[in-house]
Length: 85
Image 1 (cartoon, rainbow, N blue to C red):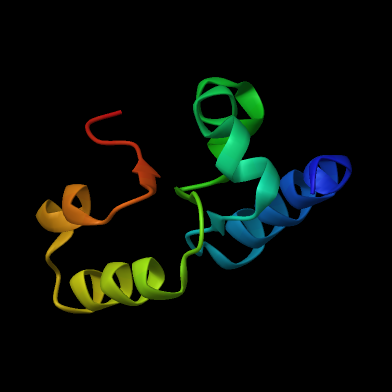
Image 2 (image 1 turned 180 degrees about the horizontal axis):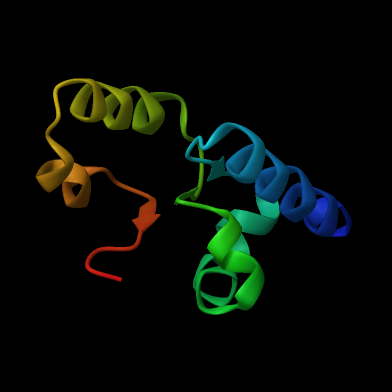
């Protein structure tokens, strides 16, 4: 939810800094504001943004990621990610 976004940013940054892991964001706020989030300084805390219902989308994304097929991420409906910066 939107009021939790600042907390999500803090947690995501901590996870990235402390553990070096990639971080995904989803939910109502991410769905409605994904372009604004991606274009903002806070957006750098997230590697992936999922919009809409993501049960199937997340599974497809994880399958491609597990196979090393990042070139297929554009086939994942509702997924936003940075490509070449």
